[in-house]
Structure formats: structure tokens, C-alpha cells
Image 1 (spheres, protein in one colour):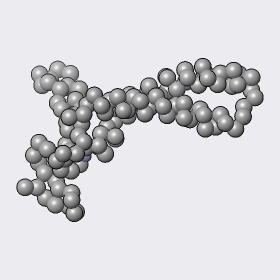
Image 2 (cartoon, helix red, strand yellow; image 1 turned 60 degrees about the vertical axis):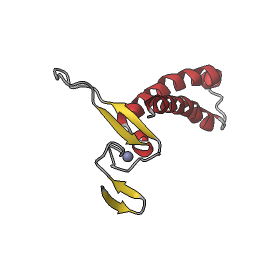
Image 3 (spheres, helix red, strand yellow; image 1 turned 90 degrees about the vertical axis):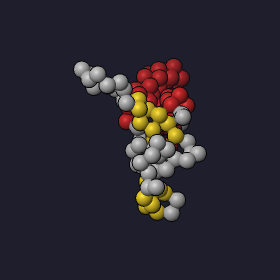
Length: 119
Ligand SMILES: [Zn+2]
């Protein structure tokens, strides 16, 4: 069943394959994402099953994580570094502290989304 692309990678049309790339999932991590129903359509929201690689690139999840990072990262930066930023006495540590401050909520939001959508 399915078509072999390269060693260990099988494309299958069954339920146990990634709905995006077709990678056979077996016992691997897989995630279920719901897509929004089309307005006016009687269909319920469709579900798609994705492998970890496709789940990490799932557009709506990445977008939500970026929004969380922008909001929470800005708030945390202002709380932690606001006095330094306003005083204008920037030091070199800010060049790694501020990007890391934005990375934390992005990673937490992504981890939460993946945890809640895990099959
Ligand atoms: Zn995939």
C-alpha cells in the first residue's frame, strides 16, 4: 500500500499518514488541526492530520505564536529592560536578551498548540 519515495518514507492514502506531505506516521508523533469551515457551508470544520515537520509549519499556528510573541515579548521587554531602553544606555547584552525575550513566548505558544493538538 502506498508508494515508496526513498528508504523509510512511504506515501499512503490511509488514515495513518500526514495529510500534508503524505509521510507514513506509524507510531510517530502526529497532530490534528481543524480548519475553519467555509462561511455559508453546511460542512463542519475539517480536520487534517500532520506529521511533526508539517505541524511546525502549520500557518495558523505559527501566526498565533507570532502574535503571542509580539504581545508578550514586548510586555516582557518593557518590564525587564524598559528602564535601560528609556535611559538610552544600551549595552551589548540587550542584543541577545531582547530577541530571547521574544523567543520564549513564541516557543511556549507553539509548544502549547502542539501539545493540545497531539493525537
Ligand atoms: Zn507531513
